Amino acid sequence: MENAREKRRLGTKVRELRTAQGISQRQLALMTGISRSYLWKIETGTADIGIDVLIKIARALDTQVCELIEF
Image (tube, rainbow, N blue to C red; front, top):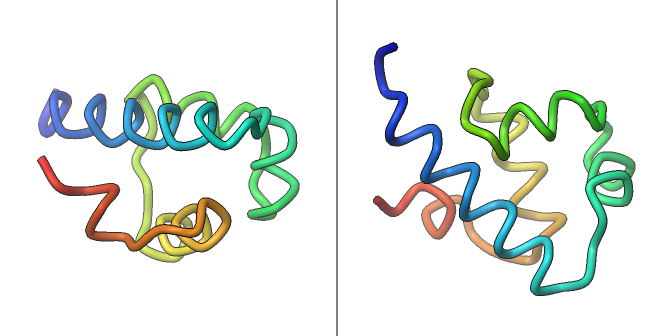
C-alpha cells in the first residue's frame, strides 16, 4: 500500500491530540461532520483523507494542518 506509513503516522497524531483533549471519536466526528467509522479509519491509517477533511480535523483539534502531517 502506497503511503501506508505516513497514513498511520497521521492517524496516530490525530488520535493522540484527540485523546489528550478528552474528545471521543464520536465527539470529533460530530465536530467535523464526518462519520465515526471514517474517523476510525483515519486514526488506524486505513483511509485516504482529503485536504478538506484534514482542515476540519485540524480546526476541531485547535491545531494546524502542518502539525498533523509533520512526519
